[in-house]
Length: 107
Image (cartoon, rainbow, N blue to C red; front, top):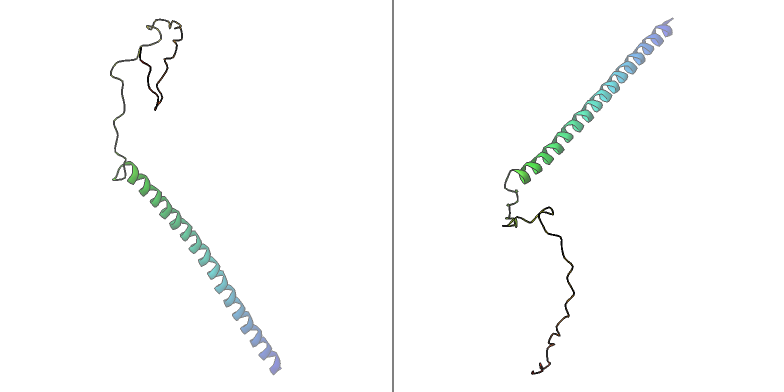
């Protein structure tokens, strides 16, 4: 009978150690999941802050490009309603051009 009490005691001890180990591993699993979620949220916030900073720098801050004057016509271009129809022009004969090194003929 003495062996029976000792076996029960050892079984209770094994059950207690097993239960403690399960609780420890479940706690570790919850902590890892929480840490991963926290890291993902904080990482996303850092990325969004970096993008927002870049946008603000280049649109409002010192990174804003200086406006350059654009070429605006001083006289308004005639619209197609007021412009006379274009008349075909006869092609003119091209005049001979002097080439470097040649002497122009005297008339």
